[in-house]
Length: 424
Image 1: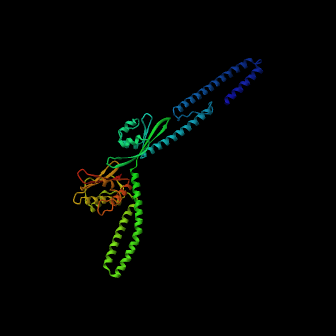
Image 2: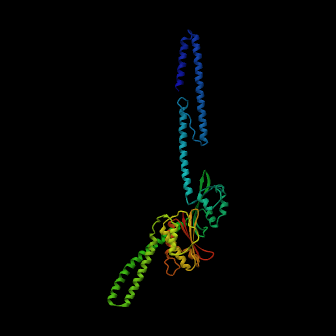
Image 3: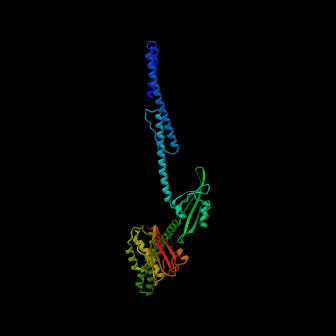
């Protein structure tokens, strides 16, 4: 800009000199005019070249922005023309670059959240092609290779009938399926329509709710036990007090029959009180205090109470659990196995899987019916004459607190298999 103003003033001065001295010094004035004309032409040519260079830079920069390349930055030296325009371009490019980085970080975070979610997510376009899935969908459907681009109706037809009915229904539905271990798993399915890039899509969400239902069931049992314990304690306390007073009176009257009556009442009250305390322990299980398992010590401790045959080598895998709680669970299972078959061999197998350790205890007893297997983990349920239905209910609560599970199954060769699955 300064060079342009200087050139304008120079030409004005030349015009004034030509007007005043052209007649007196024609040769000098002509020479000056030729020299200044050449200089002016050179300056204008350089300015035009710089101007064209700036326009080409802007053109290339705009093409880069159109191609989603926001890393370009132009030289905005003050001596170049249009440097303000170039500066505005650089500011715009920097802002777009910053916004793109922010969006990229949000997409990375969203992708991690979706892939870490236990919910199955599948997005299907208007042509019936899968355009998005998370890692949980890949594991649930057990499909080799990527699911992206697969035909959704064909995939649905390869599933169980319950799955097909749930996925074909609009809205929400709940259904049950048997897993690889033969256990019933409850599922919640929902589908909804949405528009992505002005095109109609369908989003399918699937989630297993077995664990949630199990937790709700246990919570309900705990509430029932608390209410029953409270009401029984309110009755046991005055009964026990009156029984004690009656025993004192019976001793003064020297009446043996009254002593027998009050002793019987007192014994049954104490038994009922112990019964209530046992069930109250179900509602007061502490959170696991985890530590690494020392396998030799654990096996030796268990076998000192209930002998068994270890049919596998001890694993080298580190397993962090509450030792006392897991020992209580295994002792209860071994006790049940010995009661089912007092004279038969009891075996234990410890198997290390990819993400969990399986401790399987087998007996040669009569096994369990399907009804007993389905109800074995419920409080108050017992097939024993003097059983309280507390042992397996406590075991279930402990194992679920470790994010594991208990699996009961009848063996083909006879007897029952109880498998304790604990995550590594």
